[in-house]
Image 1 (cartoon, helix red, strand yellow):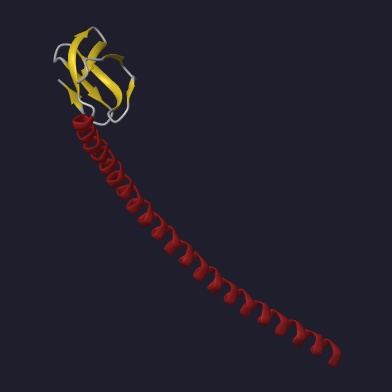
Image 2 (cartoon, rainbow, N blue to C red):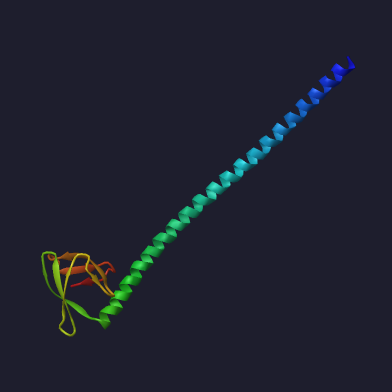
Length: 131
């Protein structure tokens, strides 16, 4: 009977050890879950900040393009000569005429976004407007 009692005590001890290990693992799992939650929150916060930064950068890039176009317009002055249904004619200081349509690229000004014959203007991707 001593052997049975010894074996029984051994199993009780193993059972108690297993309970302790399970409790310990539960605590560690909870700590890991808390860490993951904090990381997810931090990532969400960073995502919002990056989104704001991206918007600011896009706005600044548009402003820079317009500044470059304005400076370029002093160097390579183009003036609007005429507009007829989706086509415009721009003339430089030397009298050279440039015919443009939507998406035509003009160095320093960007590409043509819109030709509005009612308002008599050509809007460029840089924000510059020929009138």
